[in-house]
Image 1 (tube, one colour):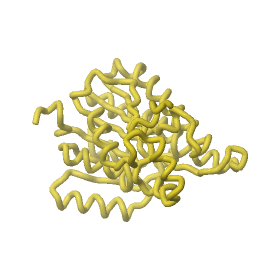
Image 2: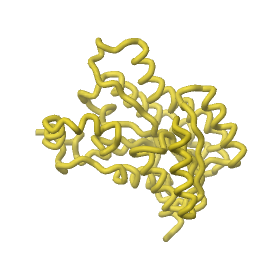
Image 3: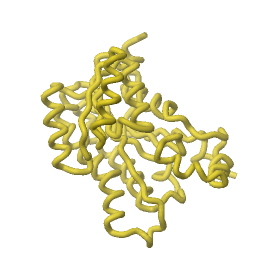
Length: 255
């Protein structure tokens, strides 16, 4: 395999790397040759995943941290700086949602969604910058959602964070281009993850989802992960500031 179609020798940090899309991204990276460091809030689950990967011969590590919290991020990057002298890839994948109408949100719920989905990504990008700038070919991928591209019934604050994440992606792509850091985003539609399964249990709602999806099915996490991996490869070396919708045609489905 040509090096431009692999991640061999790359170092990658993946947030929310123990479940769903984040877990699939971490696995994809490992299989493509990267050394992967995962972050989540459950240390036992991190250790379970890391130990299993090490037994398979992969280079993996992880740390429990709440990336929405600055002190946690400080501890994370202190540990990462001792492990690696550079960071080639950052995937801001962690996210949450509270599905209710805007007027029903409490202030605490609003700040929780904004903090986890948006403020954490901004903080992670800023604190990763010194390590990314030492890469010479750094790549950031922000995990967004089609909820940031069009209206969904999934909730206004969630959509706000994903739309803002798109502008974060675009701005940093321009601001950091001179530092040889590319910044892109991926916007999935409904994907079989623990977060989405809560909604997909409703058969009538799932039928509505499928009726609006030209490809007529729910995405698998690996289908999103492979797009993330491509955006981090040298083969995507001239791609920056872009958002790829992994949505089975949902966002372009007119009447």
